[in-house]
Amino acid sequence: MSAADVLRYGVPRPFEAEAPSSWLARLALAQGCSMKELLRFLDIEGCLDVDHMMYGKALAELRRRCSLPPTAFAIAGTVMAGFAKARMPVWSLATTIAGVPASRYCPACLRGRSTAHLDIHWRFIDWRYCPVHNCLMESVCWQCKAPVCYPQDMALSKAGRAGYASQSRCLHCSANLAAAKPCFINPVTSSALTELEACWLLNGRALLASLCAGRARYRAQGVGTAALCRRAYEEWLPYPQQWSRVERRLRNDRSLEQVWRDAVRLRTREELKTPWGSAVSLERW
Ligand SMILES: [Zn+2]
Ligand SMILES: [Zn+2]
Image (cartoon, rainbow, N blue to C red):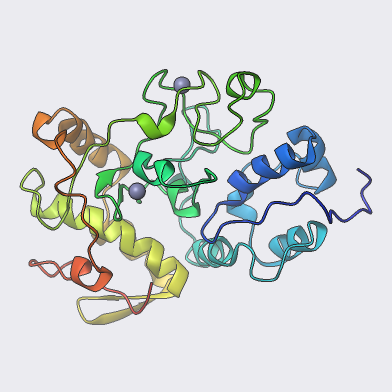
């Protein structure tokens, strides 16, 4: 690969809500090159968090270099532009203890994908549950407890060498991440949550929609992107340490392990209309 080249062949199409970090790993696999080589070719070697910076000019350049259509990463680009405009704290994006960018995952979502990939909103710590399957997002491999970090060489990983170069696998122990047992929780109906905790779950989801839409409506009042950050952690969302206590309690609650009873898909408008009326409501999502 030379710096002047543009990739025209062997470029996988990004999925609608896919994170650039996830797609770059799939691209390196398709190109048969190392991640280091690919990042150098794209001039993003040494970048601390590719998802964080991939909007605006940087995203346009990525599309150009990889012959992607202008619609590629439309959602990731819009969310991250909103993230920058709202001046959200970087700790809103999941990392390992050592500060390496990490992703959460929903085992049921992974199970349903013919090509495993990770969504941009799975990077956000406030995206705490999957609204499609009503379960908590998982942050580590269920078997070896390793975090899920991309972009990374899938082919050279333990999973890749065992013939499982896929994002549905833990790259450290090759366990199938889709086999993780989901912790079912429905913020609208579950009695295991207090009203405040249910609001935190719903608001986290609404925060992402707000970053994407550029505005939120909170208690019938419009909130622009610039004010999102201040409002988010002062009124709508818990700090990480507040939530970790709740999550520990929920994961130890045996009654949440059962069936897929709660895993019903709710329409967005209904879900955000909570009885206590304090979830952020949205113009569109
Ligand atoms: Zn899911
Ligand atoms: Zn593992």
